[in-house]
Image 1 (cartoon, rainbow, N blue to C red):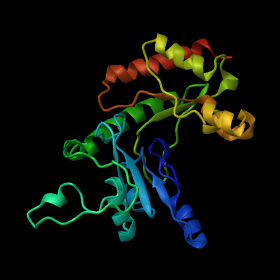
Image 2: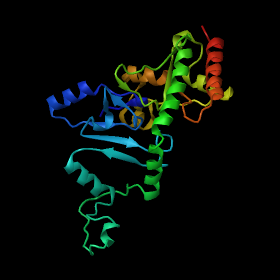
Image 3: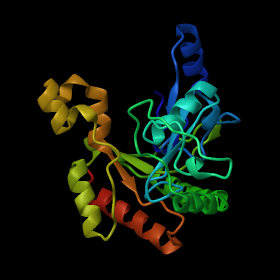
Image 4: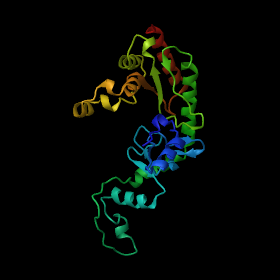
Length: 260
């Protein structure tokens, strides 16, 4: 399950080659990656199925919901069945002019279909997806140009080939060079009027997994290290130049104040 985290496309060449050699299905997590491309190919076609999120904070939103892309006919039919209670005919099709046909429940399905209103929202946003991406890309470039010269942080990489969806702008704190941890850095940004997120807290450090499986932070040191050092800065096409400058000024102020 390759995860195109923050919108950065995974190396799908290596992943698909390994999957083909081992006869393993590839299901992509493209929740952050509606615009992402690996080399010249959209991530939607790189895998047996690729899942997208249209949650409220995503680059395209239907308030909630998502989309699965696949070219496998058998999976398509199964997905259509499972999204509507496992019933063989949708509520709409059961009452179309072709005449009534008996329906049957053939699987323990779910209620996961998007409404027409939600779908209309997504279609409308698709019309400006490139414009929204371009604005986020401009802000991203502004951040990286300045932050790349600051001590105490590591900026996110750009793919050498392909396209980054620019869903999130993660900064990694170099804790050896500053006198503040990740959580207090987020609080200090808040005090400066800047909201920051944490994407994400590593799974093995969360309560259910600690209690159920007895995980400790040191069990997965790489995941813990990245989790404990990473913050996400505001990144939205709605940000003004002043907003972006305020973010930069706040980060610079904190790095200067807490420098070792």
